[in-house]
Length: 262
Image (tube, rainbow, N blue to C red; front, side, top):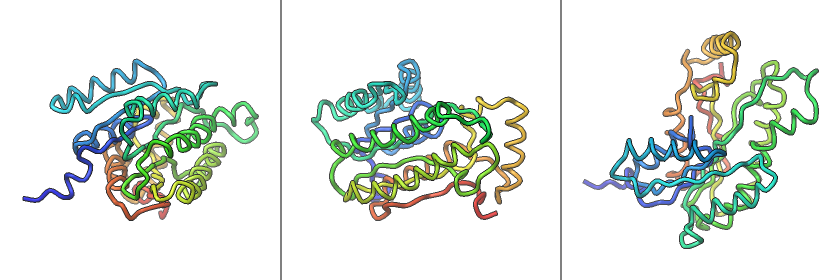
């Protein structure tokens, strides 16, 4: 039986920045399951080591296809760290990469407009916008120059359907959409796409106080047409499709339970 769909990622080289938890880990897990060579990266060495251990435990036969390296997108020497990451992922430039997925994002606090200041705005944008642009810059030198290759960014839905307190994150989301379209031009023929998740059950939700989290979950479930909250595994399917579909470029793919159209 031919396996032309199942084998589409076999032996491909995939780098997942933010791949130690949540949607990034699920995307890395899925890529391993589909036969890819996967490198996971995040800001802390212990998180990278833990993710590698979990992936190798789940897929022992793929242990030699799973590696990782830390990269701190908030550091002063961020570009140097990014170059070191890509050198590691490409084994010193010996191999070109096929796909790069960016899901990284540090914790943030919902801040009313009246309490925003320069420091808080820069804190929200440093990893999600500046880090993303620098990752794109460096990845263009290491990705195979072909429509078979892709860079996939991660945004959200709060810019398209804002709620109080999310003004800074709304700016980030809108920025990600603009960056995606611009990069699709600048990086052609490499494909650049954006995943826009709704509210997803990841470790990131632990940053919210319990009462506030419950309120957010209730509101989101009421507004999502499915009446549900997303899972990392749901989003992994989106990242898989954007890597495998060689005719999708400059696209924004929402996975939000129908939140945006409710």
